[in-house]
Image 1 (cartoon, rainbow, N blue to C red):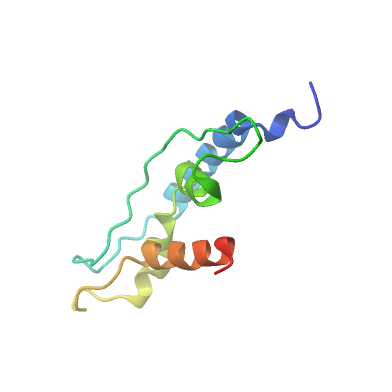
Image 2 (cartoon, rainbow, N blue to C red):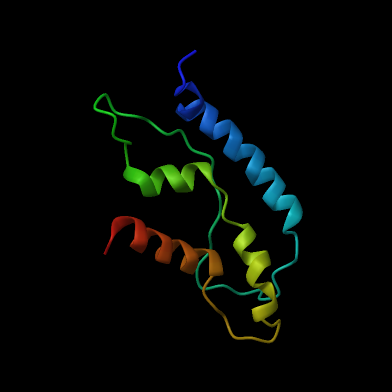
Length: 105
């Protein structure tokens, strides 16, 4: 076994899946705002590594395919109200900022 074997996509995916489960269990505070203008929904997708070592779809596709960011709603729930007008999903806003940073725009 090479020292880098633990960094293959299958190994990383399994570890992140365990982290996703723990995050979901630890952050289960209901989000009070019922009407959202955007909606994030995690979908576990296959990540393909191209022969030159690049990731098909880039880092943003890899990140959203492996990490469930739904926990962001629980972390921000106290900032929203049931009576508030429709708002953007905090996960969508967080991911826009994250991708802006990753893509360096």
